[in-house]
Structures are given as C-alpha cells and as structure tokens.
Length: 48
Picture 1: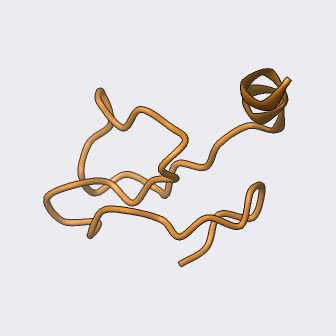
Picture 2 (picture 1 turned 90 degrees about the vertical axis):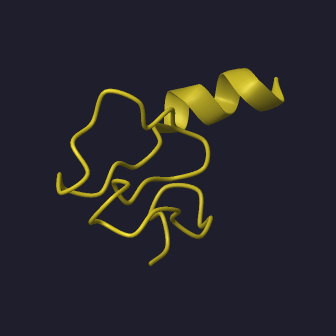
Picture 3 (picture 1 turned 135 degrees about the vertical axis):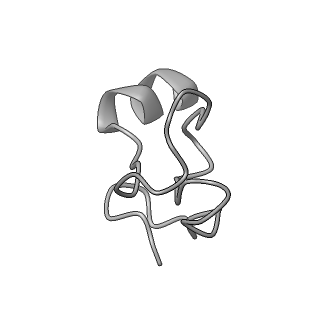
C-alpha cells in the first residue's frame, strides 16, 4: 500500500505491526488498527 499524502510505501503487516507510513511513529497503535498515514504539516516541517 502507498501513503496517499507522501506516496511512500507503508510499512508493517497489519497483524504484528500496524500498517503505517515511514514518516509516522507507529508506537502506541494496535497492530490491527487502520493504516496510519502521515500528515502534510509534518512533511512541511521536515523539509523546511
């Protein structure tokens, strides 16, 4: 799967690790939660 915000490939398998964008800290999410995508504001801060 691809993150719709930054177009990075999502990490995790959805069973033992939540599917998440590599630009997001996945700690604190249950492994079977919905995919976690980054936020555009975070990307702007990172590349500014």
